[in-house]
Length: 301
Length: 176
Image (cartoon, rainbow over all chains, first blue to last red):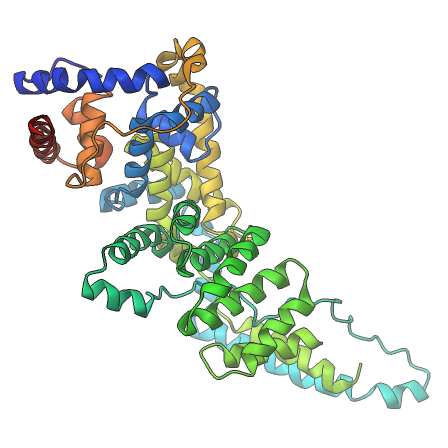
């Protein structure tokens, strides 16, 4: 870092803010380098990470910098960067060794047709074999039973998919009529959901964790926090957030909350509770009804 | 277990093999920007962040057969975080910036946050970032530009706007 490229006007500005800066730094020690601040905030462990976190907890300059850099939209990966990243795989693995190559081959028409024929053959043979046990038992021929299903098979329909971003309708109306606090909420919600939109659930959870208690009357921060936690496999925290969202959710978000709550419950081994959630959804017409009915059937088995 | 039930298992299996798996390429396209962004946050330097991003996807490539795609992108973030920790250990930057931290940390007793240095509703985050990096951390224009993915002219513009605005605010406050 160099101080030499400050022009005269900048030097003057630095003198103007020196007193305020010294006052802040007198109580919070010297500010760490921004790279260290951000690394510590992101949870990276290094020698002085704890000292950096202690500093940033009491320094308003660093708190602001972390918040601003966290929400800053860095330019996406450029074509040149993309090319270099891909080159790194190619250097190590070579194009022929790519794992997806056999899938790519599989989806060609000929192998696909062969696989389809095989699947049909398996089905037909399976039907014939499974119809024979009763006759064969009489002839004292031992029949090999197929393996029993696992005790709690994972429901195929209760799969985590990203929840669509829904904006509270009432808030939009108030926004249009100029409610300042609602405007602030929607603006902050949009900023917090930006990483969610980009599938960066760690950052989304971090931002929503801050936002949710700030706007305790809205369900959306808790709901998307819950969904983000599910993607991070933090199922107990996800359930806690979804439980907070439930009493706050209006009609438009009610079923979404119930569906993702069912996923959290099922992952936590609370299959009965999960089934109750999907039973309710199954009995209610809406976006989740079909999926819920399919899942309810599976959870009963 | 009757034949009817066994058939349903076979049927399910036949459905299973007809579902196309998510390809490595599509996973890369889906998560590359989020991983890069997280890497920049962990390391600051975009060039090193690019290396960490490449490392994370290379690891994914090596474990592609066993990885559960539901664990993405958090699995990738964990790789980046571990690589970033290695980087910090190697470079020992903290030693350079924290020579005085051992004694300085004893002074961190402020009970609550006070007002920040560049508090103004009219300043956008990008202005505050540029002002802080420049006048608190004394970074050069080119260092700030490289960190933020901006041109030096853009950085200069943000700084100029920020300074003017803060000066106006200060003079208004002084006039009261």
